[in-house]
Image 1 (cartoon, rainbow, N blue to C red):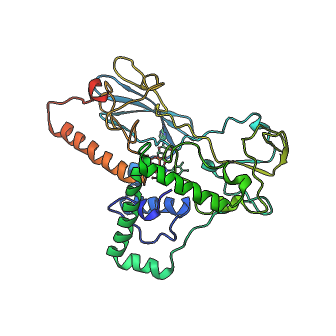
Image 2 (cartoon, helix red, strand yellow):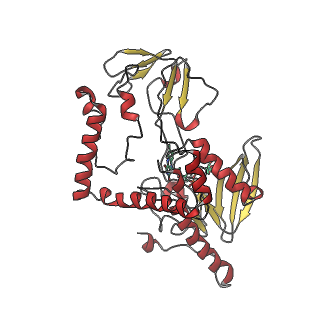
Image 3 (cartoon, rainbow, N blue to C red):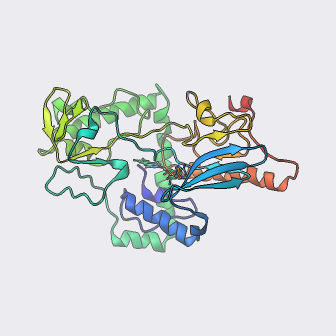
Length: 344
Ligand SMILES: Cc1cc2nc3c(=O)[nH]c(=O)nc-3n(C[C@H](O)[C@H](O)[C@H](O)COP(=O)(O)OP(=O)(O)OC[C@H]3O[C@@H](n4cnc5c(N)ncnc54)[C@H](O)[C@@H]3O)c2cc1C
């Protein structure tokens, strides 16, 4: 999670964000406003899914499915840019008998806003809201907004030392985080269980605002050790005890493989899905050996770890545009791809 003032394009700040951390709806609105402002609708085809792409030696032949009708449409392009995202392929977690549950089953990545959680157990988190006068200052004074964004960016970038394995910074951070978590949990029974055994940075730095505090509330019961199985009316915990539930929310379960979602096949018949089944690798997270004119965003080993992804995406887009400019203006180039040695 990053502060929303930094989850914007670098040239498109938004002064209207309501809080230090905002809901997905507010972030979504930023991108919808951005699309409208730059009149991007005409380039976007929603409800269309790319299901296959083959390089025939001269161009990419792409098969696109119209999601609503199932109709397949053939398309062709000189350069194929795959921007299918790395954290949106959600799936149900592998819990025995999950499909047996007769209550409402929700996934955090596919939230059903029509489901009411009134009179049911609800997890609630909160954040610090900006006042109307603060928002007015952000709108009227771009330099103040810029200073806030710079401060956020610097704070995030300063975290980098934390992610260097076995460094003194990582050690100190771990000590500090452990103490903070223990004091916020304030419960000897709970104090050690949610504290990760792995190094800070192996997974996203947590917890979020008020998460630990919510674990200490009287209406929250914590079952450590995972769900053993699911029944029609609830879940069975690791100790065999059954817990009745109206709603079961799965907040885990993503396919985070870098393999493309559809076959990407070069002239020799090599499918990138097979090539990347075990050990995906590419050039600066953007291009693949022997895959002509194929570019991707946020490929394997791309610089994700701390801070917002948008600057990474912007930097990759700038790099891609330089290639494409050369390809368009230097008449002697039919296709481009990195050599295997450059990728290794
Ligand atoms: C819970 C959660 C929290 C996150 N928090 C942060 C955060 O705090 N900061 C941060 O920087 N990032 C965060 N992320 C990561 C977030 O995914 C990225 O920041 C951002 O969305 C990446 O943009 P993108 O365009 O690469 O991918 P996306 O926004 O996922 O867009 C990819 C698009 O491609 C479409 N697509 C996929 N396959 C196909 C296909 N075959 N044909 C056609 N279209 C296709 C998808 O439907 C989607 O619309 C978070 C992700 C999750 C899940």
